[in-house]
Image: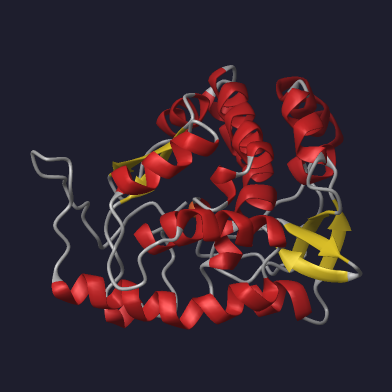
Length: 264
Ligand SMILES: [Fe+2]
């Protein structure tokens, strides 16, 4: 997660709605128009089923309340606007309560192609379709509950599980890789890289392996984990993830597949 942000949160008014400007709604419209053909081609049917259930507006930034209303009917999740960056402790607490923290600002045109921190396009377009799916809904909550049992020094271990599933997970349908993760659904360049890229490693979903895999947030991932059966998330949600983290710590981190960023 980025340590600083050039953006400030958009604060809801007394009616709970955020007033986005015409320019901001135009950014959403253009991001949506660019990304929809990509997800139709490269995202998993599980994601697309959620995307169609939500029927997000194409021409303006959606309000969290209207998305929450639909999520609530399917899985009991809701979306709540938060500042651009929140700490892991608050993040895990919200997931445990089936509440998705959504950065409320939208990127400016100068960051149209890539933005390091999450904005509302990533949060809503990327994340909320999978939160209509009971498997992702339960698994996300399980990560939150595990986070509540951890000391802060272990937060970074658990977040790898979130990163390689919720953010950057893949699945495979009839021999073809498809994206599940939000970071893929909302990225015009990493989406094709993840499913078609050559020289990319794709390993089978394995909780302990994932917990041992370091990542960088500012590059296309050199490695993805593939959930061949999305139903496996139900079993993953039942695991003792705190014990899994202890085991992963005993085994140690894998050597990174990416160049070390000396400036990080
Ligand atoms: Fe995200």
